[in-house]
Length: 223
Image 1 (cartoon, one colour):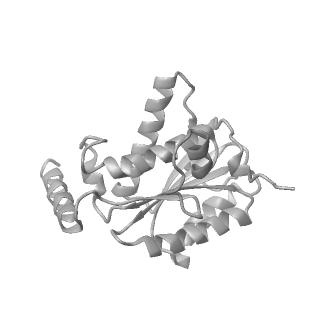
Image 2: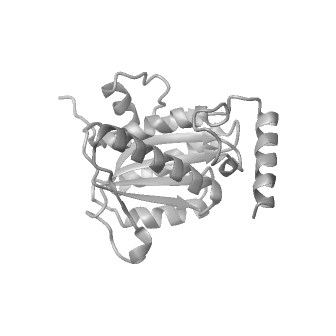
């Protein structure tokens, strides 16, 4: 008999933990963009906004059962040193069946490294009984936080915003990115075998890096 993965069963998420590892301006920006979009869609639809769970409020304690979902923002470093703090957080959710999502920041053209990280992260979630639900690989390189004040659907942010909106839909439905696309009548063809959607800049890499560098330098002059 065909079985259904937990990530393919919609579930209203009442509480969500958002965490960036390591802490960086870029990862915080990506999480902010996700949370901002979730809040906007909740307001438009008149639905309740999931309550954020503060993992740092009880560093040593277990949060199993207190968070329905967790969203990681991580860099594409698929090594033991990078995975250690991620696994420490996952240990606190062990056996809870928590929905696990990820936003992985990668370099432009860095899909292979990001894929290695996603494979390890998915295995770590499966080992601990968390429900893997996929996410987004944002091939931005460093410096995307400089786009915080750029239009969300403008030329520079649009590819990443469209990918992030797929993750928003999954989080709002409480299921995997792929299943959310199918339920919403969208195209799941761009969701890979690990449930990830990849986004890359809409402009050539040299132009992209130059724009981020200039905007980043401009932001520093205002500090």
